[in-house]
Structure formats: structure tokens, C-alpha cells
Image (cartoon, rainbow, N blue to C red; front, side, top):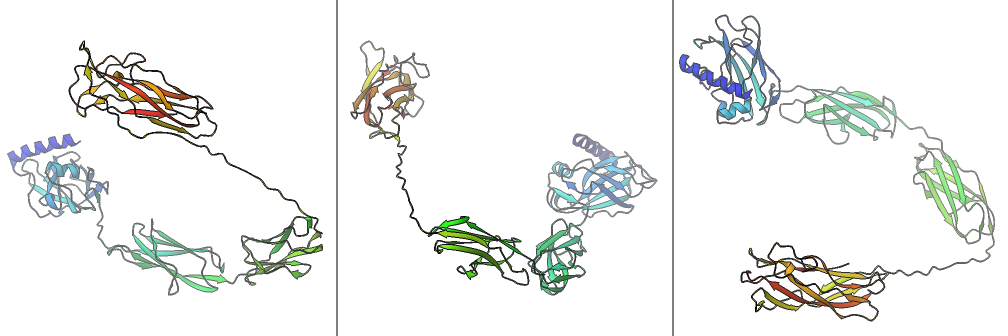
Length: 521
């Protein structure tokens, strides 16, 4: 579509060269002398190229049309949206005009941008030969930002109405939740609703979402209430409105009957000085108040507050003999709940006959840990010396002592291995790690340890960087430094190895460093 529109623009330019200007280059927006345009879609993006339908046909003196768009910035003098065309043209009825370019493409083709503000589409009925305008149709649209437009003025005054619904239906019982729901029309009006009981505010303002706002309250007192919803617009052009008052009756609560149950643990009999637990439960569970426990009609301690419909009392000072316990519910608000008492629960307390106890003696064996460390991480080998046959350079030295400490439970044994990286001089020169070999040895260990040094690993014969070392040669792969057998690893051992390095004679002078990673598992 965009390629077609650009081609049409070229054709329009060629016609302009033959017959004159396609449209006036005036900053003033032409009035709609013939009527208006209806835009579809009515809202969209800057990438939209919609259809504008005229409200009537063009005059008989015209045989074609074109359409311009006027607006802020680069659109001030009008930019062409649809080049001269007779597609769908009519002089007897309104007809659709396809917008040739999207607003974004119009801006791009004219080296400008879409800015927020008011734009006007102007469709002109013309004589295609003389390009004389015989009348115009117009339509205003508004870009609310650089990419979104709408066909209604966002700053036009908005009149609102507000209605109020209250649930449940009147009357309600004091303390029960009541929900006030305000409906604001139009639903697009943004703002807040302040719910009121007479002149008093109910809570804080509630934001309107999708045309509604709601508030739930249990604070309405007994009596008649005049409830309203007052809407305040969130923008200067959005008018406020107040709902009609809703008369709502709140009745005083009727005391709710209750039942109280009691259980005693242990059941039936209990030894003197043992703990006896009395557990009371009140139905309904929402009843507020306390429980007074009794023993043979006498109060046992002070009342115990209910929590979640239950209350408990523990005693270990009951006298030897027969007891009958009850639980009396004492409501916090006698107007809300009726007092109730449980049936008596018997318990026989027997004389103390002595008790026994026991102690558990426990120790925990910790998991321990396997540690590996070196006191000095830097090993410096002497400068390599060329062999008499000039085949390679050689140097040797010793690995700094490696400390392995194993305190793990179960004494599973361990293995220490090493692997070296290629030597590098920090630039682009390297020595293959396969040219580094070692001869492992045990410096010392504790008597209980069963530690074996790993096999000697010969260095490769001065192979070039990037060359794979012969099988079993060099430290480019992981090699064993030492192994501790199962049940022979706990303690501390010190390990070392004699190092030997073969260096190709082609190696550039410099200081080369390799990282030898020692791993204990």
C-alpha cells in the first residue's frame, strides 16, 4: 500500500507540473463547504491509513478528489494524504476515500514528525483537468501523543452522571458489611468517588476504574442513613456529579444464642500433681467473650478470653478426689450473644504414687571437611637451557608444598589431581601445557594416613602450541598428584612434585606463565 501511494504521489506531482498546484499551500485550514468526513477506524495509531467517508456527494462540476491533512509542526501548511483519484467518486451520495499514506509515512516523506495536537483531514472535490476545487469535506482528529489518535476532542467538556447501589438490600444488621457501588457515566471519565453518609465522609476517596468505584464498610450505626456518591473528575474538563441519595436502614443486632462444650484431658482419671487440661469451645466461633471454668461450682482461676471460639486452662494442683468441671461463656456484648454453660465433665484425681523420668544422652558427629591449600602460589623455574643437539630448551624445578587436610566423617579417602593451562606471555605467544611434566612425591603425612604419590608424567618433546600431547604425556590434561585410600585419608599430608618443562626453540623471548589448578575430591 505504501509503495502504491508513493507512486501516486509521483503521478500527482507530474500532473501539478502540467496543470498547476494540486492543493493550496496555505497555513489556513480550508473549511468544510460541502459537509464532513467520517473516519474509520475512529481511533488508531500513527501507522493507521484509514478510510474517510464523505457526508454527501461532490458537486456535478467535479470528477475527482484528493485529501490533505493539516496540523501542528510540519503539517501546518497541509501535507497530501491521498493523491488525486476518482476511485469510488460520487456526485449523488457520500463515498469512501482511502487514505493513501499513514500519518507516520506522510511525516517521513516530508521530513517531519507527528506531534500531539489537533489535526484536520480535508477532502477536496476537484476538476481533474483544471484542479479547481469545487468544495471540501473536513474531519478533526486529535493525537493524544505521538502515536495515538482519536476522533473526539480530549479537552472537550465531559458531563457525567453518577448512580449509587447499596448491597445487601436495606435493612441490614449493625456490624454486618455493606457495599456501596457507584457507577459513573461515561465509563471513560477518570476521577474519584467520595462516598458519604449524610454530610460525613465514608472512608477516603475511591478511584474510578471502568466506570465504577466501590467501598465496603461495617461501620454504619443503628438507624436510618442517607448514602450518596460524589464523583470528582480527574481532569479539568471532566465535570463532577452526585448520585441521588439512597435511604438505608441499619437495625440493632439481635443477641445470637450460643452453645458451650467442654472436654477434659486426661479423661476419667488423673494422677495427683499431673497436668489436667480443660478445653472449651463456643458456637458460633465468632462469639466474642471469655470462659469461666468451674470445679464443683467454684471458679477455677480467672476468666480466659476466647480466641477463634476456644479457650483453655491447665492445672496441676487439683486435690485428690472427685471433681465436676463446667465452662461458662460470658459474652463481651450481651446484646450480641447469649451466655451459655457446658454440661459437667467428671474427673477423679488419684493420690500421687511417684513418677519416673529418663534422660537422652546425644552427641553429634560433624561432617568435617576436605581442604587443600598452598603457602606460596608462585613457582619460578630457571630460564630454559638449550640441549647440546639444539632440539629444544629445558628447565626444571619443584612444586611448592601442597597441604591436604581431611577431617570428614566416615574417612572416605581422597584424590588430588592437577591440570595446567598453556604458558602465555600476556601477548600472543604461548608454550603448550603438554610440554610440562612432573614427578609427584609425599613430603610428609600422619602415621594413620595411607597416601600414595601419583605416577610420574613425562613432558611432551617441545610440541608447538595447539598440538595435542601424546597419550599420557604432559599436564594439559588432569593428572594424579596423590591418592589417599578409604579409611586412610583423615589427617594432614604435604605433597610436592618435581617439575620439568621442554620449550620449543622457536619460542619468542619473554616471561611465560601457566596456571596449575590442583583439585582435591
